[in-house]
Length: 215
Length: 215
Image 1 (cartoon, rainbow over the protein chains, first blue to last red):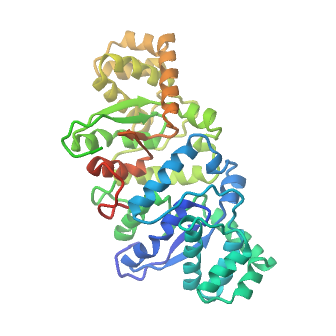
Image 2 (image 1 turned 90 degrees about the horizontal axis):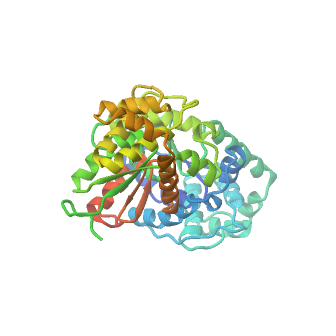
C-alpha cells in the first residue's frame, strides 16, 4: 500500500456527525488534506447517539464528569490552533437526524454537493450557533446550495432515508467506527481531530514507520 | 505566558498510570521533549481505576465495545510510530497500586530516581510483558536502581503511602485529570499521547495560535 501524492489512492472515508464540534473542525480540513495527496473524501454520516450511547453504553460527552470540562476547554483552543471560527453550544434538544437523512439523499444525487451541504450544516451549528434539528432548516441550507428545497424536506422525513441512515450507521459500527471524526484510509481507522497529523503520515508514507519526528 | 526554549519555565506535570499502554509510550518521550524546551518533568501517578471507573462511571477500555478493538489496533502502531518496543497485554488481574505507592515514597527522597523507576515499571509491563502487581516485584525493580529493597517493600504496603496515593489521585481529579497520559503545562491540560505535538506547540509558542500547520 502506498499513499504517495498524486497516486489514484482510494477515497478517505470521513465519518462525521454535525453534532460534534471536533467533527466540525475536521470538516474544515479534510478536503484540503486529501487534495494534497491526490485523494478524494467519502463523507459518511454517523450518529453519536447510537454509537456512543447505545452500542458503547456511555453517556454523551456533555454529561461525562471531568471529560466534559476538558472538552469545553479543549474545543475552542483546537479551533484556534486550526485557525477556524467556532462558538460553543449547549446542544440541548439538538439532533442531527434530519440533516444526516438529507445528506444521504443529496449524496445519492451529487456527492460533492452533499459534502458541501454537510460542511454547511456543521458551520451552521458551530460557527453561527444556530439549531440544525428541524427538517425545514436543513432544507433551507440545502436550497441555499441549489438543491430542490421541497424534495430535500420530503427526503429528510421519509421512511426511505430513515432506513438509509440506519443502514449507514450500522455499516459504520460494523467497521468499528464509534467517535467523530473518524477517518478510514486504506483500511486504517484514525479517530480524533487531534490525529490529523497521523492521517497525513499515512497519506505521505503508507505505513506507520517513524520516518521523522511525527509526534 | 511564554514557553520559549531555555527559559526557566515551570515543570511539566506528567500524569501516568503504568497500567496504560499510552502512558508507557508517553513515558519514553516526555523527558526528551521537556529537555528540548528547558523544562523539568514532574511525574505524578494517577489511578485509571479511580478516575475512569469511579469518578467518570465508565467501564475500563478493555471492556468498552468498539473502542477496545480500536485501541488494540492503535497501541502497537502508535508505539511503532514513536519507535519504541511494545508487547500487548491482557492486563487481567494486574494493578499498579503497589508501584504507585512505591513511586511516591521514592519521589519524596529522590524525584529523578523515582521517575526512572516509574519508566522502568511501565517498561516491565509493556516491553517485557511481565506483571507489576506484587509489592515484591515493585521492590525488585526499585532495588535494581539502587533503592533500599526492604524499605521500598514496606513503603509499598504502608498505610502512609496508601493515604499518600489517595491524596495524590484526589489532587489529580481536582485538577480535572481523568486519562493517561495527561500533561499539564502552565495550567494547560493536554490529554493523550496523540497530542505530544500539542504539548510541543505550547512549549515552543506558549499560546494556541496557528503559527504553522500544526495538525
